[in-house]
Amino acid sequence: MKCDKKAMLLYAVTDRMWLGEKTLAEQVESALKGGVTCVQLREKNLDDTSFLAEALEIKKLCGKYNVPFIVNDNVDIARKCGADGVHVGQSDMEAGNVRSILGDDMIIGVSVHNVEEAFAAVSRGADYLGVGAVFSTSTKLDAGSVSKETVRAICDAVSVPVVAIGGISKENIAELSGSGVDGVALVSAIFSVEDIEKECVELKRLSESMINA
Image (cartoon, rainbow, N blue to C red):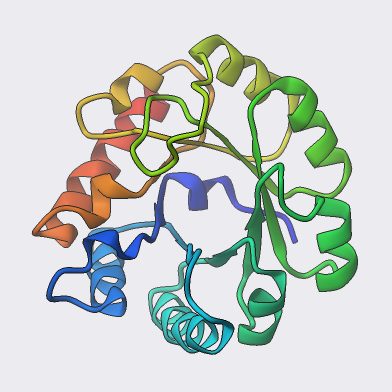
């Protein structure tokens, strides 16, 4: 499956750290109402039964808003819940192996940090790339920063959509102008705020301004 670059514009990545009084599904629906264009369910600590139940719930919500639903890392859960795709990192399953398991109909996203990794991912079947961390981030303490020049080089080198991730906020989205990315993937900038829907409306506007600058 080819990934529409418009799905990269405002890409929400879940993190239950900021659940508070709301369920994850409630938070995700608020983000969808605010205009997010893709949702990735990222769960590092849930058991498979709970993960699958949650994935089915979030998938249904994404279907309601006609937004792609991506599962992070867990190829088996992605297949079982009928997700639109799966996202893997450099230390996870290689894209070619993911494709052999999931077939041609699912979106595969791969995290990359340089042009070599980008070339390799695309050659093995990646439909889009996540590039980062573009700024320092609290959600991935081991993520090294990727320069704007490297981001630009990756975007120039590949024909698939590219989304920037890592430490992106309202205050620094504009710094990605001219990098060639198709949008931004956000974690805390979406899920740590009180009014997620309102915040997403503003973040989407800023992302559109950034890619059109």
